Image (cartoon, rainbow, N blue to C red):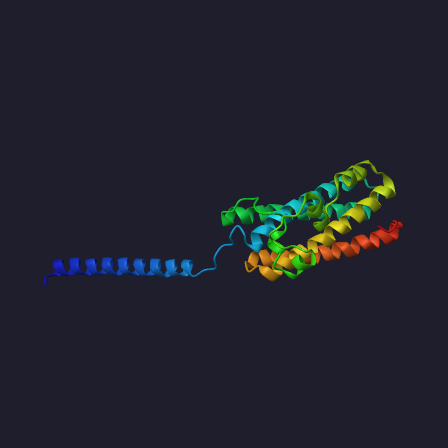
Length: 220
């Protein structure tokens, strides 16, 4: 074989090896992608948690901002700021989960996804009968329209105490939601976020209970 044909043969061999390597790598990556964990579906615990907790956080942010604007108590103001900024960021994070999973931001009766969990059993959820608006509000620990109006109109220590009472109840209702997704879910990012939320809200409940005692707030 002359030098010129040999060079052409070597060049063709190198091209063939490169093509084979690319094909092999593509196959490896395709296999890797196919064997990865499936994304949560629209009726999954993760999707239900993301939707319901966004709605739940929305009211917490609203109440925290209301008291932050008018309280004269530095501790209450700092706590309200932490709740408002922390839960606003978490709302954005959960909104992004649903976008990345290709799922709608709304779907299914509130809290129905919890029915198979221990927390769902405690709430009497069956997953078949949707909650009424009042049952949903109570199960989620949400403030009523009248309570939100009272918070907006209250002043001084009375406003601080009302905020603390409403927010403790609000946080206490969020704990079972985090526990339900930790029990039923499997998506790692959701589980990690839910665990952080649970610990943060338990800590804040303790802080708010201590503030109620410091201010001499009436028992709820």
